[in-house]
Amino acid sequence: MNGGQNLLQLILGVITAVAERHLTEHRLHQERLAAMREAIEQVVDASEPRIRLVGNYAEKLLDPVETALRYSEELLRQMPPALALSDRAWSQNPQVNAFFATAPDLRTFLSENQGIRAFFAQHPRSTACFALLLMIKQELETFGMGLQGELIARDTRQIQISFSEHGLFFPATSEAGLRQELKRRLLLFLATRALELINGIRAQRGALEEQYRQLQAQLRALKMYSQGPRPLLSSADTDERRVVGLERRLAQTEEDLVAARRQLGTLDDYLEQVRQVLSRPNSYLQVQVQSIKISRLGVKLSPLSTEPGEAITLLEFSSLGERRIGVLAHFTRHDLSADSES
Image (cartoon, rainbow, N blue to C red; front, side):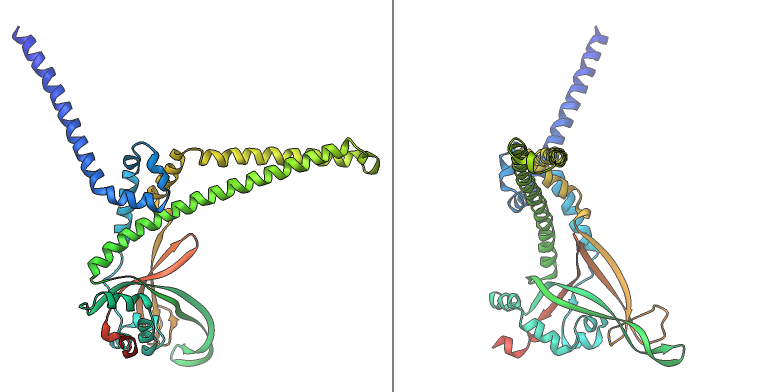
């Protein structure tokens, strides 16, 4: 009897332990879901709001959103502390010197930025601003004077480095605040990539539907002509070959159209497109660390060159063929031209 009771107690203990484990897992899952809820809703708003009609859409997006946020955090960890933008920094920091041709150019850039003006107007007590600086790096082959050994040579092949299309984005009162905003923005960036993918599939489907209708019309017209006086005016073999060719194109178009419709046949398919993008963020946004040696005049130097120059490190962000150099930057009201404060 005791043996039976012990067995019963053992079975009940196992059942209780399993139940407690399931309850703990459920509680932890609900806590994760609650912590990610705002981010999930932002993703839905930025991609396809109708996927809220899918049952448990938030739970289905939980893992992909967490993956995208972890990737965003990793990218931000690679970004060095904010770089000062000022006249003094331009004369002393080789990076700032490389980014702007002259100190007045730097001041003009800061003072003419409407977003920065609006930021300081909205934050009258804030003396400093932190923002994301984005630029395009250009390399142009030129010829000029350079060192060859210890001799100065003319018409030496050189690579001129320059930066253009500067922009300041997401101004904040602190670097921590800027990094937090960038984390959110990177998530929304991936969500908009999902929207672009969905729109691309829609456009492809629409183009295939139009192509299918046109091919059907051409095939009907050709078959009608073959039943009228046309055979007396042209070669029957030529018409038959055209019919065969049109039928082949029509069949291929129908096959492509079925595949395109299958991609977005239901709202679950829309949700899956969003999941796929967020689950593979590195496919849609990459960062590459570049280290180059550059002279004061913007000439790219060999790492072993004896010419005066400084090594600078750049972060290049790329997405679907677009590339930008990204830097966290900070500056004060006094770094703007006097005209901008009047």
